[in-house]
Length: 80
Image 1: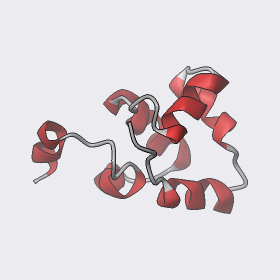
Image 2: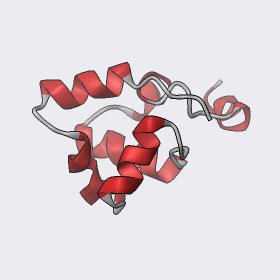
Image 3: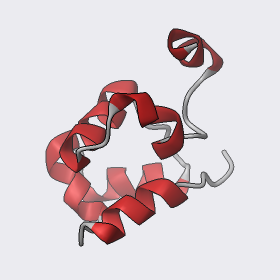
Image 4: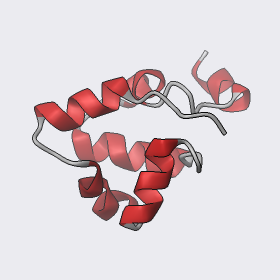
């Protein structure tokens, strides 16, 4: 699996003074599980994406900006 680009997510984390490990609590994932998702070794699940967005106060309509490489074609069709 190729490395994902999460520039928008990194920007939001930085602006709010968070680290990627701060996403463990809302997603109920371990530090290593969060790191694997940022590295692109494991895809983000849709519930985890929404949990991250809710935690950060990002509207759900911006899912494609926060997680651009992780939305499958099937999930994309829901937003079109």
